[in-house]
Length: 335
Length: 191
Image 1 (cartoon, each protein chain N blue to C red):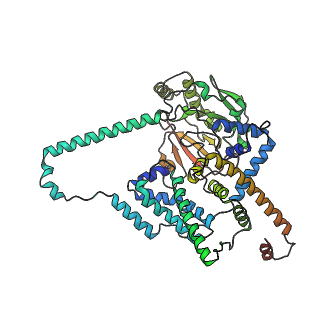
Image 2: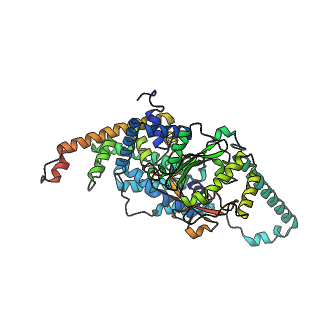
Image 3: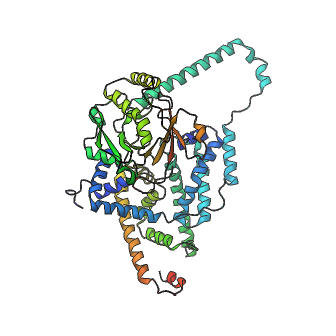
């Protein structure tokens, strides 16, 4: 394969299929592949091999519990973790009554609390130093408009995204790149859609492809538009939070419509440095509610609650359910 | 869902429930890891359990520098290497290696197994870590102590080679496919 005709190497194409290319290269790969039959064949070959390999499932034995000798080692270890018991009478008979000891203990507790607060504050500062403030706008924009369109479409299976309206981010906010027919709206969200306290709120590498259904396009997408508008206007986080609160209080922003949901099944996205492209998933939106209503975050529950909004400040709860395949139909890693 | 890393730290702090959750999440994948590499389900179960024993013993030294998933497969790879040495030693002394379990295995699975066995060992391991354990390139690089680019190029080669092996097996099989009425057992024996 000549790189004159193909802007990406075969290995890079494979890496793209594995979700291993950085977002900018991934979008380049995606937009090239859409137009290149040769690369489509190679991609189909790679997927075919992976699918054939999946035939080899290893049947687990009946035994699934922890074996006794491991249980014993576990108990021993946990026992060691427990603090040694102290004989109370010995303590009571002398030093415990001394007010100097109590004063010393109080001072130690204060010191420990102070250190904990200081360390946790330092940790927060360390975490946030990677992206402490907004980068230049150019870094959030994608220079190749077609690549952004392709990345946006990759959020949902082609059967959905091919007829969806596509938005791309420009200097003045999101603009329509393609009109749609099926009510879905696909776009690539940026880092400022993270929770306001996220360490990656200003990470310019973040690219989050999403396809909102009509209900979400009417009732959730306005949040994306509003946050983007405020970011591009140069508002501080505190100003943005205040503005969002008042917009919701004054009913200028809508509450989630019944059935509002979003596809996030792209393997080419970069949701954050911490989780990369994550796993393909669907998101469902509701007015602020308790996560127990969906059994979210309970052991073995496939549902998680995304802290993206959750009253901080948007009064919206977002549940996430992973799915087994990327939008291109290939199998996704288990959670 | 609580992350593996948070569970590991909770276990380090003395939580039995956190260990149980890690066991529930990783017992089956580890069994699969050993099962595919040893073709012996009893030993696969032994070694999956031993992996957790190693986790218990090393818990105080665990540092959340790598993903728990990578950490567990790192332990599993070491146990696997030791097991293979043991098998090699015993087969050298007895002059016969244990037969892999194939009873009742579907034909498509046998093909996959045979095709994977034809790969060079380093490429085979990379391919399996990627396809079955779903590890990232950088995790594989870290585990096998090779550069990420090497992982990528070997993985690419191994996938192409595997495709070739699978295609030639399919071709051979269709060439050898008996006419209607011929017993299936004969077909199996000719492969």
